[in-house]
Image (cartoon, rainbow, N blue to C red; front, side):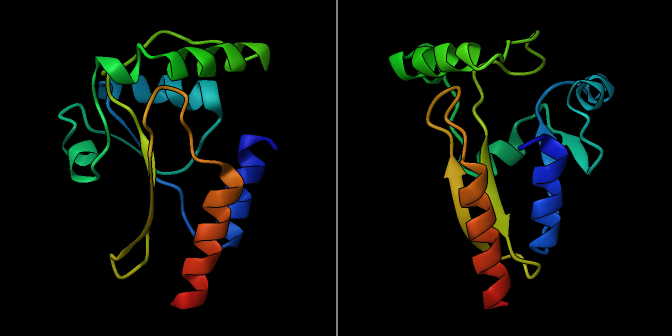
Length: 132
């Protein structure tokens, strides 16, 4: 499923996707151009948001057998690594937050390429919307 279809599904579940990168603000326009993402987009070069969310950072998260396998899988599926813009050692994640501010689900990437499954994110969002 293409990015805009996934975002439409998130919004249909009553959610909004906020992307927070860690590179320079000057990289935002290029990210939008490359991905086609038109929603809320921020950057935090200080990594304070990443630390507050408990996301992982370090050489071992990038230079590991699991990261290498994920990279090979991405290549097989036609994805190519572009120029790194930001902290190469910082891993990401997904945090589902209810409108009242309660964190209801988190995926912390253990290594480069350890991404949350979009279907799981949607399930968590739908569960959170039923509980509010």
